[in-house]
Length: 284
Image 1 (cartoon, rainbow, N blue to C red):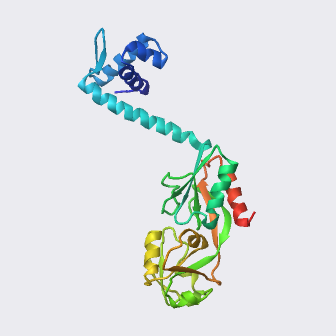
Image 2: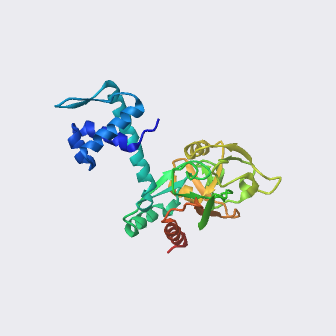
Image 3: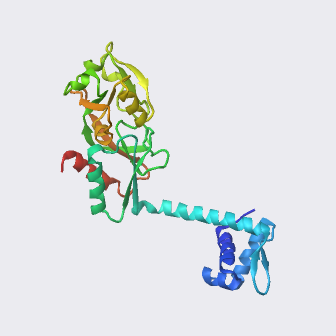
């Protein structure tokens, strides 16, 4: 059984326009072509879809169900076409936790001014690729290398590592910390998307760990004082939270911020986004 989109469009046009003649005008074809197309659809489905009299055309009970489904199918096809052809009109950038931190508002404003024809959308997806694998975005902000040859990436900037502490923690009174200050604490980490592991510490002085899977859960546990965290500087800018303080860890290596994309299908605006973000991190 082969059902074609043109047959479904013809059926819907007949129902919407009320007559074969008006449907033919709406579709830009002859009335005879409309009749042939409907007949071929009814043969393919082996059901009668319309009752036709000298005055009106009305769907049968089966026809009503088929028309409703045809509208959904045609709508899905229209969405598919828009999605496939929207590369020049929209850009979706995924991120797992904190987009590009303090640069996020400037990035949005500068993009809107420089590229008014390409709508920018920031999408939070807490996965290792920040939405690339899931199809939720065209580019993604990641803070650790993607060991997958399907993706390419470029470093756009560096961010300091900050410790996240409960506001009443004894270490919160210090302006800066060292890794050794946290070695006997319990470190809260997200193994899927996080940037910190016990490997930052020398063997023999690594902290105990607990796992978290979302930024809100991470912040709530740290605010309660049970664990401490280590994160990119951008988190402090995007998630200021009562009960949480952030302190620079001066002997922890910085975090590279990368923009990643599908290697074989880059968005047309990829290089433009890389250049703009690189300039923001550089202080241009």
